[in-house]
Length: 209
Picture 1: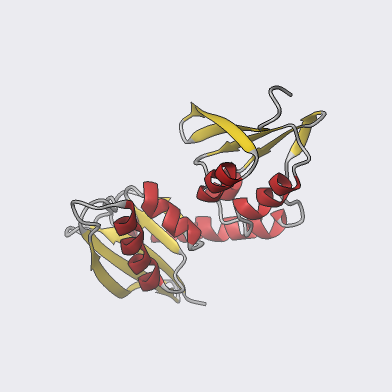
Picture 2: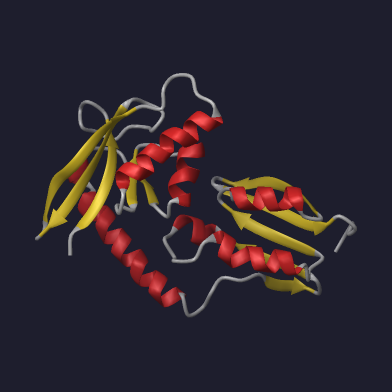
């Protein structure tokens, strides 16, 4: 079964940040050998708005097609969110693709196996005190678990059967930001470690748990 991995590289063939000009190269592995399947020159441009970023990233997602693994030197902000939304697993790696493609594939296959095993124990908020709950979305956000943060958390939030909900994540999901704006909820957030944010969600009528 062939496996595709997309890598964003510069003119020297080494991984580069998506905010720099480069080329998206899709490598295909058949019978243990990697070969270049297709490539596309790409640039986000020097001056761009959020709308421009999303439009340019849609071009990337369309080019990737069925390829759901993307590697770059740095993939952050809107590019990261758009790739995640398209159900791509995103890796940050430095160097020549042929030096790490087997490693990425090995990790992907291991995570797929873990994902299949994890489906029997779905992620859900855990009650830590009467009416107070806690959930970590980090594993969902960092691994291709087969379950999205929205699937794991949105039904619980809309049921509203809590006084306080603590969410640990490596970034605040865009859908959650929207839900907090339109729902009868308020929140505060703080960075507690590198790539780790704590969001405290409460009902607007609730001052303390």
